[in-house]
Each structure stands twice: as C-alpha cells, then as structure tokens.
Length: 172
Image (cartoon, rainbow, N blue to C red):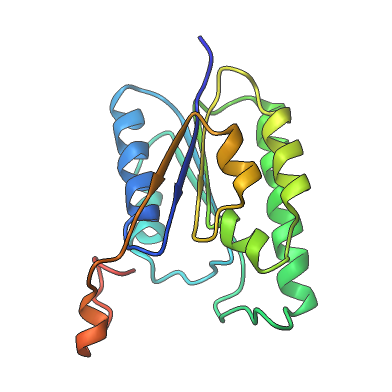
C-alpha cells in the first residue's frame, strides 16, 4: 500500500498538535512513529516529556532552545537543520517507521536553514509505503504540490493577542 504525504501549514495554531494526534492514531493501530522536530530544542514541550512513555514512538529534536534569526541565522542553526535532514534520510534507509513527522521543516525552509530542493529530494527518497507529514508555516508551493493532503490552519483569533501567556499543555 502506498504511503501518503501530508502538509500541515498556515499561520494558525494546531499544526504540531494535528501531527501529534495523527501520531497517536497510528500508535493505536500498532504502527511505529518517528517524530523529528526541526528548530526546537526545549525539553519543556509536553510531547517531549511524554515521548519516552509511548511505545513505538521516537521523538528527536534538531534545534536549539533559542529562537532562530530570520535575517541572519546562526551557523549552528543551519548545521542542526542539516543534521535533522540527515537523520530523516537514515530513518528512511532503516525503514523502521510507518509514519514520520518532520515537524517545523517548512519553517526551516523559510528561514533558509535547508532548501526546498533538499526537502523535495528527501520526499523522493522515502520508502513508498511510508506516511510522511511535513509541518510548519510558510509551505513552499512546490512542497504543497507534491502532497496528497494539504491542510492550512488559519488564525481567526488567538488568546495571545489579548495578553494571555502561553499555557503548558496548550502552547507547549
């Protein structure tokens, strides 16, 4: 059976959350999940804290705790994103996952840490049975074009706009 390519993008909340929900659904069907987070290095995310308790779920972060500068990304941010790409390639070669999520990879492209061409080549290298999810704002048209399913989260309102601080379990 052929795997699907899904893109979760847009300026609204819920891209990583949707990918985590899909991951839980896959785990419920005894599938294996690899969840690779680009541009994230904090251990405070709820999914990082719970990941070791989920059988058949592997979560790896490939980023620093600090924010990446859009105008002038630090060389370490570029290297960590490239390391993430290399890990995804290894996961494809090992072929041990039914679902792989490349969380925030689309933002890594927008911040010029990796290129659209690298992502397109990576997608071409995946095992054909693998379900692959790419998340993040700013999805390039070329990436959306190759996806089987594209979901765009659109912000209508966010509590942050009213001064509400980020809440554990909701925002991270």
